Length: 73
Image (tube, rainbow, N blue to C red; front, side):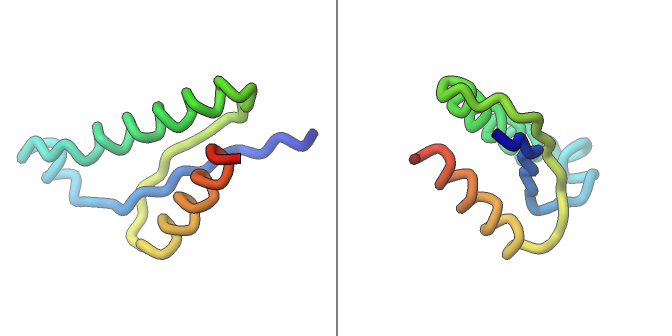
């Protein structure tokens, strides 16, 4: 079986929002990735993964759809 790296992509926000204003977005995204990977591990899927931040929302939608398909199959 081919193992690929799972790439989570989240919309980027200014660093000052996270560090200075206490915006929970970064922590929420990391928790979301953790929960998805936890579910995949229960299904014996142990691929490496990474979380990256960017500005194209459409790309995030594609990644989330793919992740949802993996989890629900």
